[in-house]
Length: 432
Image 1 (cartoon, one colour):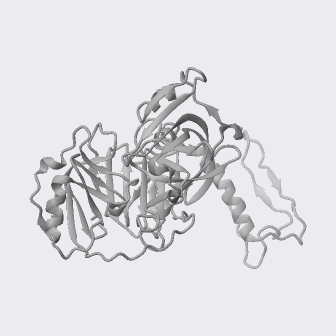
Image 2 (cartoon, rainbow, N blue to C red):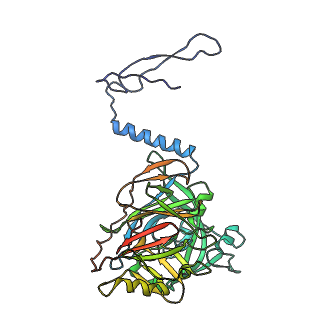
Image 3 (cartoon, helix red, strand yellow):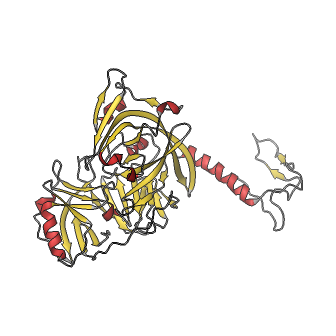
């Protein structure tokens, strides 16, 4: 049990005494002992309280880091859903030794983090190593991409194809990722963890366009080589992540590896055994009237269903649902953020739907939760999906995007029902 000293007002904490006698424990039945405390600094020595507090905070970080198996990892967020400005949300990651910064798109529709070779050269990092064909992590890559091996150099290679027709190919490398981890009581510690990611040698389609203004893609899927899965398997972070994407004041928001705790959160189970984050969509209502759409249109099977995808800017309806949806809006509608996907039976909820709300991906519980929220505010985050919360302050704005341009749109009240989960939207498609 620690002992505490009372310090009278008006005295400096460090120099209020020259010698203090403290009673000590009796050892082995012997006589009471006393410890004499001598002054360590001259009387004239002073130290600012702020310096003392910072020194204590550093010590507390080390204590908490050594006693905690996991924490909440914080990533900064920039960008906006507005297609007239950026049309995507991105974050900053640090990789390698010495660390180098990269801006990567936040994409829940894919699994792997990758950076172009011309931005990340493995030979320039002292901690980088190539993934060989015999490495068991190469087999994990087959879950997320068309993987292969070069007989000439024994490198574990990959090829990704995205829904917009773009693609990339390269090889896997292992290196350290630098993390800002909140380990308790809002204390942030800097740490590193080894991760496997892609080093891309070629890109096609929209990935080659300069206006994308990002260095790569950060996949937040569920497969073995996703950063979420890798950090969780190492005990670095929980098996959950959350985001809150701002739509106003230049966008930005919050992105954490952990479960944001919000009283109004409503959860819906994920459709099992799907490569993406699929929900069972049941119905759509406009102005309080449920649209006459065959429920089988939204059935999840093979490549059909409703997908939550932060890498998609707008939102897309299956062709059979789009006609009734537009018809219910009437001719007075000037523009609609929902688009049509022909002949695929797919509905995609992109950033247009995900903005201005907390979205939690609880991978341990296989569910997604959401709640309306002002993403400029602080949030509480649980380090696990069941117990313990830590206050988290959003420190993530890495550079504000330009303010979104105003586009004339009539606001339409829309409700989408997934199980018992209701999504109410007024033009901007905000969740209940």
